Image 1 (spheres, one colour):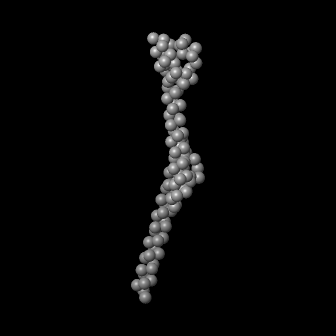
Image 2: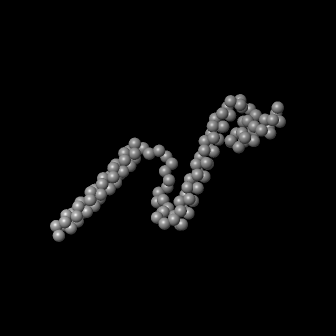
Image 3: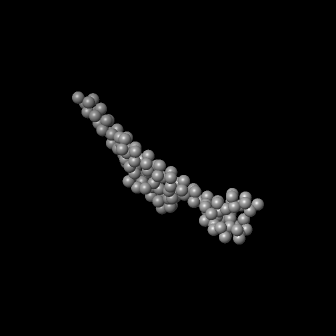
Length: 120
């Protein structure tokens, strides 16, 4: 039985930061937080690898694709605060208003051009 623990469980425990003396002197249930912490560490490592891939993708695209630029700011990985959400929503509303104002101005110019042509 000890050989099984030494061969199978001890290496995993050591990789999770549990010392050998802790491993042999603790109740197996006390390993649960170490297992959970290791899962969190692996998730973070995976996220870091994914972000690196996203940055590499953006770098390659910015070199070889017209109109693609490398991001000016880091990719956000934390949730926005309520104030930031409201600020972003306001910025989107402003962009929409600007778009419709330009559309209206373009429409009015075309209408004026039609009237001017009709008056000739």
